[in-house]
Amino acid sequence: LRSLPDDVQATVIDEFDPKGDVVNISGKLNSFARSVAATQAAAGANGGGQDPFERFAEQWGLDDSARQLLWDSAEDVRAVVYREFAPDRGTRDVSNKLRVFIRGILSGSHGRGAAGGRGAGQAAAIQSFVARWHLDGQCAA
Image (tube, rainbow, N blue to C red):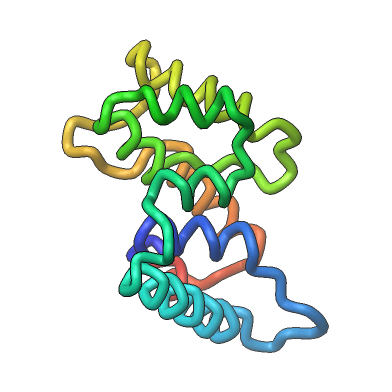
């Protein structure tokens, strides 16, 4: 899971929800992750029909003011947002969450490393997901 691209991780964490009694949860997750990766790779190969800004804005259902804030942000800020923004599934106001996230980046309080690695929020989301589904170390890697 940790070795997957950030966008695939986010989709897997948000959408993985096997139904019924699953004997091999790791196998089910691996299969789901491969499917997500293949779907996103195919969308990326043909451009997904949209630019990254529009895909992101539609994925999260951003309101006009959040879209404008993101559009007006510097390219390096947008790159961090695209890579690390991953609100919890139950977030009621994703647009406001994005505004707070961007303000954190701009104020320097956002925990991004100099190497541009994954943020603490993404690592915590992965750890929580691994614990929730009782995944083994190989599947979590």
